[in-house]
Image 1 (cartoon, one colour):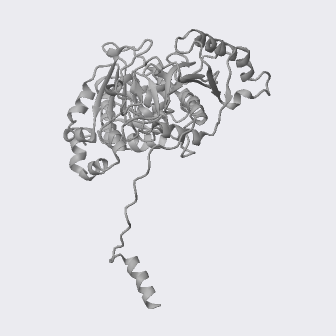
Image 2 (tube, helix red, strand yellow):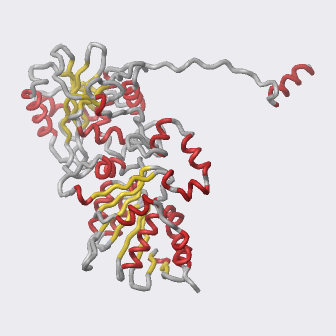
Length: 468
């Protein structure tokens, strides 16, 4: 009996984007960007083709949860490989006749990464890679190594905008900003949208129409693959448009400039030790508009959300030094605001007291989270001219890396997911709560409600009234 995989392969012709994905020779290849691009099929097929071509290959294919893994890969692969590769259920692995082994794995919590410690794989695939934390991806990739001649160990990613790993994937494959030992030539991105997937277009044209009917910001993410907006994003209104850095219209990011001497200066602070600490310096113009002009962020280089473990005294001495030396801050009266938790003296000297010893002063911030996020929303809103009430200097890279990618909590619908790198957002909301503002936009007037004389409910109640 002919194995099902061969009969299926004759009928499954990859589209041009999928062919690019199959042919990529980069060490790290990402594919996708929008819904309906045929990502899952491409990932499965790539893994199977590699396993069939190279004997004794060790491959790992990952999804975030075990349920997703089963529905998207285990069941389809059992259908496709039946009669050809042997599936070992207890190991979640397909064993090919040439000795290649395709393992199906998941990683849904910090503890799950430990199951890959000490393992070795020639190929690793992350399906929906933005659903994985950056630290999970980095750790699992340490298992990538090969002893085979004429074969290069490699990693494949399929992805859409959004998720806890959005910032990491976007930095590498979209913004192409590389750090440490990362090399540009090792990373390739192949964009794909639903229009590239002719099989889906022909089979379900209504799916495309549903995507086209989405609200503008969701349509940009799901249909067009815009990495600046995505499902679950807290600050959907945030815009970073280099084309408008100069005129400052419809962008929140602008070129730096020396603030006028009469503008009031603020300092916002969120303490962290094992997690990053964050300091932001701001000015406020005569219209009450805030500008983030400088920042000092205590994060380990190339490790997201890991603090540099500086003591409070070390942090505040550095803050005092910056304020004595920086031309925009020297000699200024600076109003500081911080998380009220730094006044806790239950374990010895309060962090706020340490700050005062170093000549750095703060007022207690209002730590109401949802109210603080609403204040940030108010300031990010553009008025009828396209001008917001908060600007960020383009040199404040850590703000631009972390704040736009924040997502809503799974358990508290109006709050930010506190497992994400939200420290800069926290100190920003302390300041926004210190200088609050009302929304600058008004809701459009409601259209008059017209009664449909053929509406069954209206006719029913009209009839009952008449009977009375």
